[in-house]
Image (cartoon, rainbow, N blue to C red; front, side):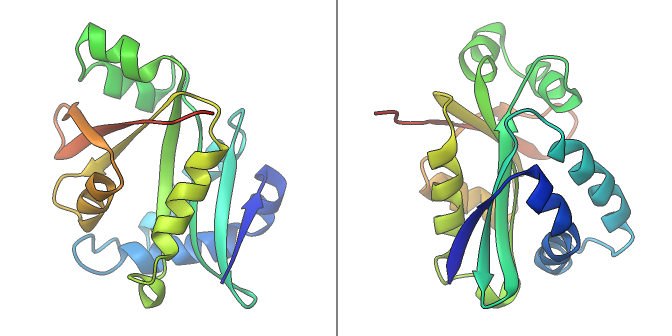
Length: 174
C-alpha cells in the first residue's frame, strides 16, 4: 500500500478514480447512495479543488486508488461553514470554526476497509494541517461516527435539521 499526497491538479486528473472509490464506499449499507448522486458529488469535488489550501491523501494498491481523504481550511461565507455556524453557540463557533481545517471527504473501497487504510489516510491528512483544530460533519448512525470517536474527535453539536453530528478535533502542533 502506498499513500500519496495530491494537489488540486493531480486530484483533478484522478477525479474519476477517486469518485469511483467514493461511489463504491457509499453505495452499500448504511448509505445506499445511488449512482446518480455522483453528478452532484463530481460538481462539489470540482469546487473543492479550487479551495485555497486543498490537500488530498490517496491510498494506492498497485496502480489502483483504493481510498482517499481530503480537506482544506474552512472560511466564513462558505455554505457548509455557515450551516455549521448556525447550529453552534457563539462560543463554539469562535473556538471551533475560526481558523479550522475542514476534514471534508473520506472514502475507502469496501474491499480495503478494516485493514488500517482509513486510519492511515485520516492521520496523514490531519498531519498536513497547519490549523490548530479540525472540524467535520458525519451522519450520526454511520460507522464513520464510531471511527471518528475512536480517533479522538468530540461532538460539538447537531447540525440543525439533519441527523449529522458536528465533530471537532484538537490538532497537536509541535
